[in-house]
Length: 134
Image 1 (cartoon, one colour):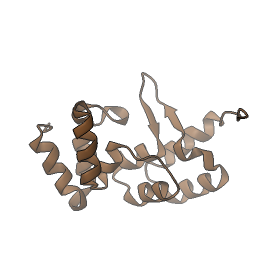
Image 2 (cartoon, rainbow, N blue to C red):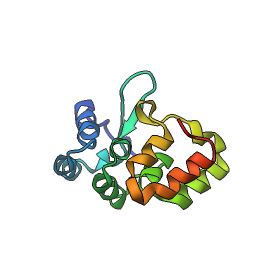
Image 3 (cartoon, rainbow, N blue to C red):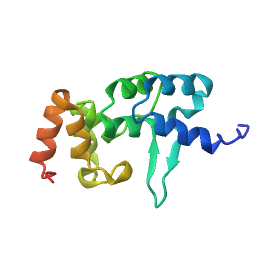
Image 4 (cartoon, rainbow, N blue to C red):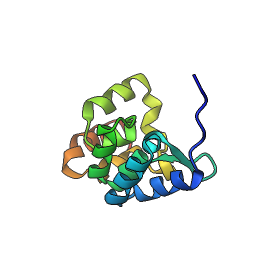
């Protein structure tokens, strides 16, 4: 397999920044460079974040669903925000320590679930039942 050139760091940073809430710009950037879909930005100190991660901790369901529809790799944090109870339950069954693993910027799994509002109420309840209640 031929090695592909690295994405421009400025483009990755912009994509992740915009995925915190600028849906229009996310669409533009992804159309311009589809490889941004799963690109991650290093904020320093091991704090890596993708566009999906940004949308998840901000509760931006429209952006998260758009990225997932284009092939973004779902993680437990996005699943929690989107109220995907069975995905969260399955991951926690296989990896119980994920309950307290920090997400981007150190934001908890429970905080991600709370950003999902009513659609994620069952995930919030599960996490609280399992003992994640800051």
